[in-house]
Image 1: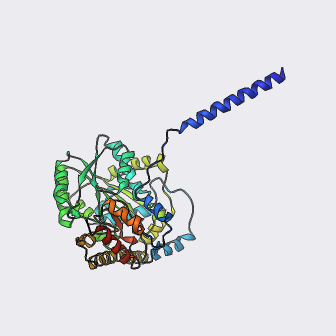
Image 2: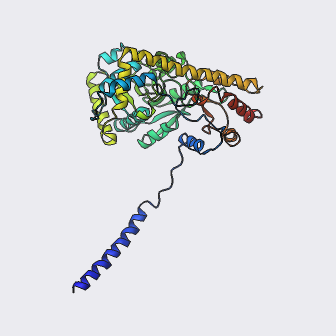
Image 3: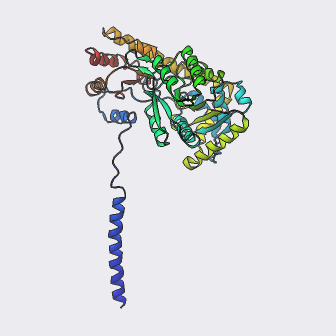
Length: 425
């Protein structure tokens, strides 16, 4: 009897294992490989290329003139100062209050009445991506029937963010491929024709990927029309200070909307302008009607963050608050961020000059007319493919050049390659 029981158990156990194995193997059988990210995939291909002549102008991160990553001196000093007082305790759901306070001053002004009157609901976020995602979820929760109007083109991840938050997307005109500049007339038509109270995503400065920004007068016209239509402006500001070298100049678009009384939203990031790419430190802020509303909105933002990541990381927040909260370190940061911006501006001039020197029949004025990290070159996907296949030059297929990847050592080679693939266009 005991032997029969043992045999029966073995059979049942074996059957269960087979059944379980079949069941488990079928759980994910319909999962297909995800398409490569159009930006991150460029770096993967670059790293796999054994050519000694390869050039990566696809990466969206600053590089020095030797093509190396940079840690700012102000960041090194801030880390030295905080090392002795570092702890690993949780931050509140809303993040570091000191970091948020300093970040709001950058966007809204040192003497902002909005800050004094406590009318801004703000939380630390996981860089600019996390700030945008928090807002997208907030939009879906509290304006469930709304859409988001996104410029054509835009940073590719914007589409992913609002898609995964289940916010329907619409687009508005922005870039004019013939002029390689702003299609302002079509943009304004789209603003006027959008339903009243629509949500618009705007790049505060250094538009990614085009490097094309509205003029101050055009921002004023946009602000006026937004007021007429009752639209909501959500600014993604990833490049404050990094575009022109002057944080106050780069935030002019937001200040114009604030002067006109808009209740805006803003995503800020320290990846580019402080080189804190891996620290994922940023901020989401929403201007409210009064302090009571700001308290309520912040509580809801924190509640959305809770099941996502519970609370943000501490180290990057400490670095930012230390740099911006100390007058000497802040001045050092302003000097260093201007240095980064100036290097990129200089590389724009050099690239244009080198292409024109070769006798290109095309106009390359847009290289120096555009601003920020990226140049929208106007090259076709086929021309970009030739750059990669024949010259080992890597960039996204929309022709976006990361000017941070251009150096005095490779600019001549890059210019010759661009001239060769475009001279018969």
